[in-house]
Length: 178
Image 1 (cartoon, rainbow, N blue to C red):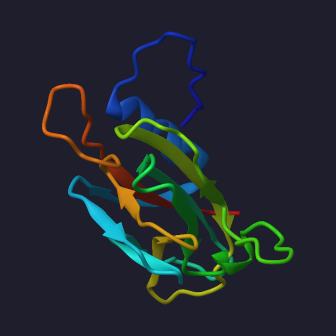
Image 2: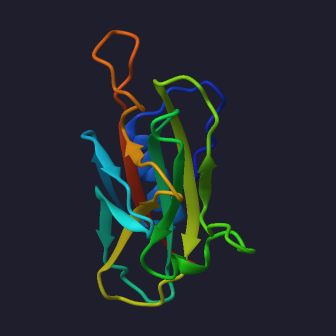
């Protein structure tokens, strides 16, 4: 089967994508989880975001797993802190180098934002080498800073009005052949 070159702006059909993936034979399986409810924590240690986990069983120990996570998180005066990272496979090394009391994570920190209803979205993308054919679970983890709490999929005050957003988050894993 020949590869199809897609043109910018071309509307793709699912079968075209499936045929292209089959021709390349690099993406072997895809598993995804979406989280549409809310989560909050005040934990000063990393915890899994409930419902933002996904499991995949690689077909070969030489295959890699591409992890793509998107996290909607609230910031503001009430919830100024939050640090996010991945857990599972060999993702533990995918954090920033720490120094002093700083937190090693993929993204996060403190906000001085005065608004109470800011909902942001951030992504984590990492190519993992789990070197196994056993089921591997990947999770988005979060921890609070020295004070406050962290909110996922909703804003700091979560006021009940049409100016406030409730968000959604997801985590998707792709098994990639070498």
